[in-house]
Length: 556
Image (tube, rainbow, N blue to C red; front, top):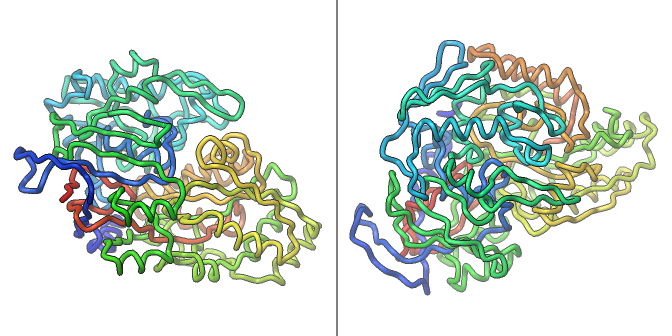
């Protein structure tokens, strides 16, 4: 299996339990279920940006998922440090020969944080909630659901399509049966998506969770999403102080699994990379994510533990084909040839970064080694622009601020290098910097204000559909809502192929055609992101999916 290849690649990282300490943290100690580890105290982790909210289904970014995955559980989960699957709220599962009917055997004696029982009825409530979500605003924010399940009972958001989901039945308290309209290669991996976490039905109803309002270029969410998130996870919600930029989570003493070793988890929002590093050195935070490539060696030399995750991700430069010039394949190819990606890797990429030739890592089934490659070629770029009548092209290039992503540690530096490459072939670039949440992502993914943009993805599970299908499986504002029917149909067909050999062949051809015929974006690099912790914290297992769970962490 391809997943085993990734597992082997991360064996060393998976085995490392990072110990990093919390100098200055108040500590209490418990002698309960800690397995011998020191317990109590507070673990403070520096987040690189504010979450959008805490309702899993309305999120698709890592800064939002970091606190969410501490408070909620999914039916299926990734084994720590790997992309392999294991049971979570479902102890086991199976499907019929056609891959349409999925039966989940649920864990017993699990309760939501509000004291209500977790059971099959709760599972079905969540699946039915997602499928029956009303309103274009709400549906437009359900990025993962739309990508995996294709559509809703009533499609109101632009781009929603043919639903995969059919129904969910609670056979008894411990058995939930989910029926699909057709097979989809995303399953069972997609059941581990943080966006598909199971929330308390009572809390969802009580706090009006389905109400999402759009006000111009921004969205407003419910009291459930902002103030009363309720899951089954190892931490409960303790508050979000937006003025201080702090999210507080409390230990859940009734958690069904490995109970948290610290009493509190604080995610402190520090948008500036240098400030995050300073607070790590000062001991006011005990962990940071996505350090700048140049800082890794220095931090390691100072005694901090710096762990590189394997590069299970992709950074790309995307085209908004709403711009008529960008509809011309020759212009998109010219831009691909104009980018000196190898130089970018060498000057701005973390150690181990590689130029990307397609939109998924080579550990994923369906990677094609013989795709058309766009090696740096200024003359070729200029020639194609001339042939297309686009020699005086001006493009608005959007990039995010106030954020570091696993695939994009310093967006402004990456933008600067790429913009210089484009200007060298005669393209005028207008750089547009926008804050990550409430600005950049909405401008790009909801309103399509850009011509070019940089964005990327860390894989959630080991399947080509999670990469290529997520990006290009349907019309999206991000790429100009182009009805690239041939591409969509090819992806749908590959995703519906049940046998591994046929699936591999189909996805390889999809990757060849994306590179040569469609080119909706340019793959830039695969970069191994790092996580850094101080030396007194034990038990943090780094994940290639950036899927770290903090219930295993102890301080001191």
